[in-house]
Amino acid sequence: MNQDDEFFEPEVVNEFIGKANGHAHAELFVYPGSTHLFIDSSLDDFNSESAALAQQRTLDFLARRR
Image 1 (cartoon, helix red, strand yellow):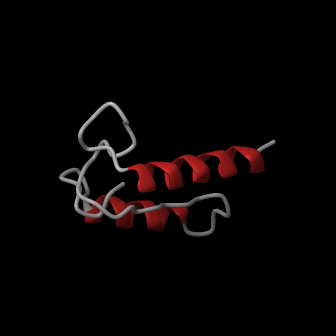
Image 2 (cartoon, rainbow, N blue to C red):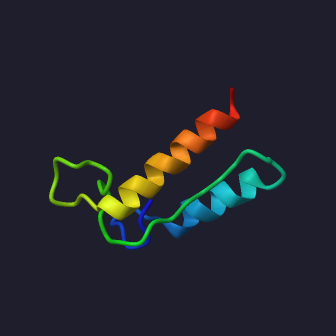
């Protein structure tokens, strides 16, 4: 999720945080920028730094689940 994303809703974030409280595996990451599809390299919204970080965090998460 990007902090300036048109789909970023603080209420949803707060609800996630409330539900995640006490769950050790819950994580929420907010990436700098203003676009929703920052991870799609075929679009103008692509942000290589944020996409690489999101990809690494995803791989790390999956590796912990083995």
